[in-house]
Image 1 (tube, rainbow, N blue to C red):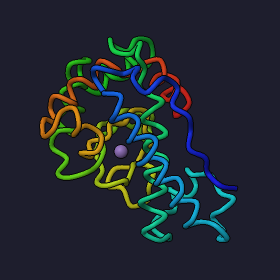
Image 2 (image 1 turned 45 degrees about the vertical axis):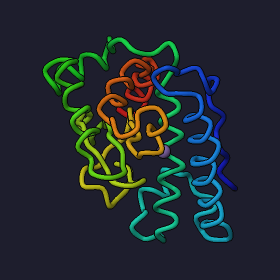
Image 3 (image 1 turned 180 degrees about the vertical axis):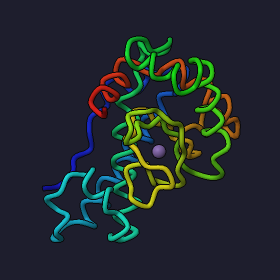
Image 4 (image 1 turned 30 degrees about the vertical axis):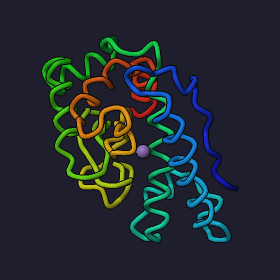
Length: 202
Ligand code: MN
């Protein structure tokens, strides 16, 4: 069964001024739509066509480059939209807040680690907060459209927060100022959505 581009859970201009309307229109309607269509074309008629995206990514070393790039692009952007909200920002509480304090010393410790991963990823890629096999949290980053679910990832785990640092994600509004985009992202993180992913991943 073909994968479907998920609807944005808010209007294109809902995350402005942190992420602008035009960027959201192109990012979701062109880039994410393109990954979705190319993934479907790559798996059509193969034994991957009836697998979940998570299963496909877990065995990605055995698949084509098209499945790796477009399967990653499909999954990564679906997660990205879901962990942002116009009501976002602030800090996590509850089990997630406690796990962040345990792993990074404090929320600020997490913010520093995540921001550094996002700013120092050379070229295109993603920064992640992941749940590892022992249920602990870690910050990592991946190139291109790779992600921590993939069996080729340096550090594997279940992503609960991701930030797209491809230039297409910020160039219209921030030009080359990736650090400003990374800072602004913290104003739209939906910590309730991240906490729900954390609870499901453990
Ligand atoms: Mn993107």
